[in-house]
Image (cartoon, rainbow over all chains, first blue to last red; front, side, top):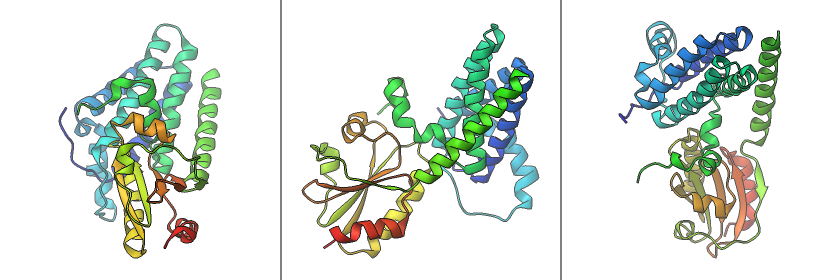
Length: 145
Length: 135
């Protein structure tokens, strides 16, 4: 898995707002194809590179130049882990909606939205802080030594 | 219409979780009953009080906690800061009863726990709580 460089922390916050908006649209409309697209986006960022996130490009070219420069940087590993958690919930949501299990789709999408909104509004990465709990249930999360 | 209610529910849940986490952030809790410390933690103990910060690779706020604790330790006699990456040490966190990172445990040289803090510690309140235990 390629390693990403540390990033301006305001970029992921902007991206989280966009993700929150997308998940809100999915919840209200039940448009599962949009959720499927978000699932693919989560997967690309988690398993390939954060550079594939289009919202990151929007931030860099349209928003960052208007903001005060910052030297603060955030490590990429927590961000990619969060994208991986988002991928799992979005995938379950997509499968739920697509197979007619709408309640499952809504619950999974709602949980992903909660995590995205907490990240966007407060900078909290729920999945990252709960890594120890998640790992107890999913031993495969263990990093190779 | 169900989707709108689901959205409102998710927004309310996010609000509640956000408030809860913010209230708990940096809160000092009482020491757990004495336990047999895992070796990777025991190895970090120094004279005075050691702040053992448990972190993982995926923990963004751990970096902020490290800055606060390192600065506090540098300015306080008898206080040492040590960080332990528990990403691949689940046995350690289970034995310590730690569910989230960062968690900071203040320990005496004999392994007695003084207090623990969940989240990024608040410098002044942490120092006040540690004062009676410092040399």
